[in-house]
Every structure is written in structure tokens, then in C-alpha cells.
Image (cartoon, rainbow, N blue to C red; front, side, top):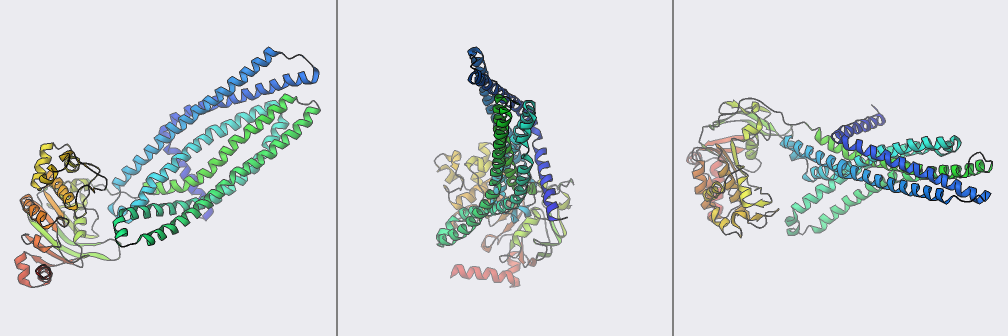
Length: 591
């Protein structure tokens, strides 16, 4: 398929999907269409009345016939009422298309995207920047919504108005009407040509726009690091480059789109002049009345409005195609598969059998990994950075699926189990804490929706977090701000540990759970952790080996393989890789 045909197919497919997406608000479109017809008919009536009023005044000027003031007053009142009615119905149409059509469309599309994100694999979210996703959900959908309004406004108002005006112009005089519309094909052809050229520019602009969002999100999230390393100048330079490209692409898109309306206006003005000259000639020869000429001239000016509206719509559609393609690309992403197999009973037996995995399909992170864990055992996973510790947890939780081998929980292959059911068996406390803008109670109760205050208090007592919570200004009703800057890093970790206590899952995953707390706090929660882990299968990822010396099994992972396995005393007796790591940490501490 050629590039040209491919572009055309993309246009038709995207427009088709846009039309399908506005079906739920078809009722509003129908109402807007009826109101639009009323507005156009009132405008046409007002022009006809003005034409008749012109004839009355012309006859007085030419023949000295006495003016019928009652008729003049009646026609003036009808014209005024028609213009007022047209203005009010136009306002009502705008309110319908703006406050109903666009709002419901935008709301529905963002709900679809939000719902879609919950069904996408973790790999997609890991490989796509947050700024890019934010750009698609907010900026692109807003542009699509604006253009849905333009499309509806163009189709309903533009074409309806043109059709009605054309009919009434021919009813007045076919020669003058033809003079008005003879230039329309030329202007439409030129506009369509320029519109096709602007499509590519808008696609490039939307890509750069996503890069800008990603940079801004990255810059603000890493603001402390930028300040600490004095990278303001470097970041500003990067921003300048992106914004220069952003401005260049936007300027090109707007220039091409902006050419459409002047072309329409130019051809309209030619038609307007042609009607004036031709109408004057016909009026002098008494073929048409002066009122008819005035009426056609007013129709010609009125005819220009919907054409310019259509021209603006064409330019806006090209902009929206770029946005819509990005949004539909996200909505069309392959979702995680849904399994219907029986869920494990949650006893806690876990077996990895010859598991292999690669994030990119090329470089293996896990190779032929095998180990087994009995219910209730505490398993520590240790090893150098990049050795595959966190990847084991990712595979166990099915954030990613293994490329080879099997992982079973209580004898059930987890690849056959619904992911939500599988994850409901695990509680997690991660190194990177996650809290949302809400009260302390809300953040802890997130682990068990509907939990009572007494249950939350009990969980915080187990996590040794109750003392600092009681010292907060509003206690459990204290609102944690969006960036969680009104509590310390250690306190945030204590809250996530309390959340895990409250969830009370049969199996636990602790990924450097005490890495962000001070030594005293670590000692406080370590005892609580040990009591929590009793009777539960737990996987503890740790760099500080002093925290896992009491583990039932220690898996020493290096380069995606278990190189050593045993208890602390057994591994120390081997005097191998584990002993080397442990002794190096101990020497650093004692030193």
C-alpha cells in the first residue's frame, strides 16, 4: 500500500471510530440538529424580510409612492424577531454541543483510557513514560473533544445552512445563485489539498508534545536531584531544544491549517463581487428587483460563514487525527490475558522449576532458575544489584510471565490463574513507598477496603507506627499531601507496613522494606515483622544481610541463577559468595 493510500485509510478509519464513539450522545446531536435548522430558517426569514423591506423603500425612492409605515413597521418587527430568534437558537445549539456533547465525550473517553490502563501488562507501563500517558489522556483527549464539537458544529450547522441557503437562493434567482456557488468547488479542492499536507505536521507535533510532557514529568519528579547536582542549566538547555522543536512543529501545522480559511474567504469575496456586478446589471434591465439583489448579496455573505466553518473544521480534523491515532493506539494495545483456572488455596507452597526470563527477548535475566519453598518458610533473596532478585518477585506476582519453565503455588501453575486472584494471596511492602493524597486512615485502609478504625489502629500498633501517628496534628485524620512531604521517609515506610499488616495476606513480599528507616526504627519494626511472618510464606529481598540471618532459606542469586542456597550458618560454613558479601558488609560496619 502506498503512503498516500495508507494515509487515506487512516483518515477514514479514524473518522469512523470517532463517529462510533459519539453514538452514546446521538440524542444531543439530534436535538442540536433540530435547533440548528430552526436557527437557519429564522436567518433565512430575516433575509427575505430585509429584501422585501428594501423593495418598499426602493419603490418610494424611484416612484414617489407613499411609504406604507404599517408595512415597514411590521416587516421591521418580523426581521428583528427573526434575528433575535436566530441568535437565541444559535446560542442554545452552542450550549448543547459544548456542555453536553463535548463534556460527555471527554468524560467517556478518559474513563475508557483509565479502564484500559488497568488491563495493560506491566511491561507496557514500564516501557512508556508517565508523561506520554498523561499527554494522551489529558491533552490528546481534550483536542479530540474540541474537534468532535467542531465536526458536529460543521456537519450540523455548516452543511445544513449551506443546503437551506442554496435552496432559497435558487428560489430567488438561479443566475445569481449560480454566481455565488460556482467558486465553491475550487475553494474546497484547494482547502482539501492543504489539509492533507497539514496532517503530517500535526502527527509530528503530537509526538513532540508527548516528549515535552515526559520531560516535564521527569524534571519535576527529579527536582531535588537537579538542584543537588546543579543541573539547572543542562535541564534548561534540554527544555529549550524540545520547546524549539515543539514550536516549529506547531507553527508549521498552524500555518498550513491557517491557509484554508483565507482561501475560502478569497473565493467568497470573488463570488460576492460577481453577484454585485451581475445583480446590478440584471436590476438595471429590470430582470430582477433591487430587493432580490440585496437578498442574494446577504445570502452570499451568509453563505461564506458555514464555508469558513467547514474550512476551520478541516484544519481541526487534521490536528485531531494525530491525537486520535495516539489515543486509539493506546486503546488497541494488547491486554493481559484472562485465565479462568482454579486459584491456589493460599497455603504458601511455591516452586520455581527451570524458569527462564528476559525483559527484551534478547538478554536473559533469569536462566534455568529452580527452587522450592514450603508453607510458612521465610525466604531471603540476596545478591548483587542486577542479579535478578526483584525479577523473581515480578515473575511470582505475574507482573511479567516467564519465558520458559513453570512457577507453581500450592501445586497450581500460576500461568493458568487469574492475575487478580493470584495477587490477592500476597501482601507487599516495597522499597519505593506509595501513598496517595488522603488521610492516614485512608492510606492504611487501602490494604483492606472498608476496614474499621479499630482494625487500622491495631495494624499500626503491630507496625510500631501508632506513636508517630498519635503525634500528628489530626492523628489518623491527618491528610498526607500529594508528594507525602509532610511525613518522613521512614514514617511513610511504616504506613505501608501497617497497610500490609491490615491486608493480612497468607504470603508476603518484602523488598528492602526497612531500607528507608533509621537503625532505631528498623529494630522496632523488625520484631513486629518477625511476629507477622509467623505461619506465612514470605519472600524478603535484602541488601543488609544482618536483617535476614534468621531466614529459613537464603537464596543467593547472581546473574539470574541461584548460586548458593541454605541457612545463614550453612552458607557461612561454605565460605563462598554469600560469606564474601556478608563479611564485606560486616567489615564496613565495624570499620
